Image (cartoon, rainbow, N blue to C red; front, side):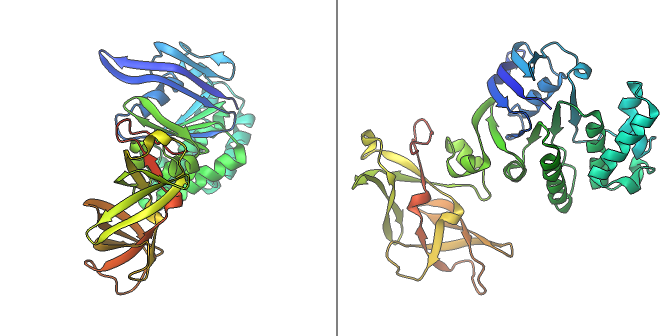
Length: 364
């Protein structure tokens, strides 16, 4: 395996910018996720790493080798596509060993590689079948097997689970994560699904309009989003973003949340930036940062439930706080109905504060 370095990579189609100065280091054996909405440039960046798109500005370095201008077949990478891209007339065995056959690998060695890959992916019983005889999940395993047979320095995954149903996506996420834990392969994985990003990656690069908005571990991005865009993109439901005014008391930030029934004052983290005293800010609270308490509890907000989404282990609810729609994660309770009023105590210690002008986080 090898490390991957992306240095000031830019891409334009005519006058339309697609990537604007991307800088990312991927350590040897690391699982990096590129996540963002359609059109943010994540697949273009992956194709540039693979050599399917030209690199006009910046450098892409695999190991110690700059691969700008190197053809895809000479970059020692393997790519798994969204569409599987299997040869329909070949068996699973023939699909996996096809690239080795083109490289004139001896038959005995090819057989050993196929056996090893099939065992890793648990597809030994499928080797003589053709793609039309396989389920979607089985086809995706074969596509992964073809990549594994290459034993490349870097694996590239381009939204490989998008064509699967919800149950299979969960199963294949577990398969891919388990595979990485066994092989410790260097992987760059593109997805628009933030759940995939949070569950799979060692680190996540959140992209928007050709730029990396934040690069960090799933915990860092979830708990300390760099700006309002990341806060609103990562999480389901996403972070609640509520207008507030900052004050200080005993060296800590304080804000007030307004409702139709009054206001609640929250104490946050240390007030490290004195110039923000008395200025407007955006308060960020995740849905699980509200605790349901008894009516009239000091420091709690009464809110009316507008929508309920029971999921079994949790109930996602939507209410209105200070005129804005807020997502809540509540413990399941029988008899709760739309229109009910619940009392919620916000967790100020877990809150984030953002600058309304720059949209960047202003708390550590």
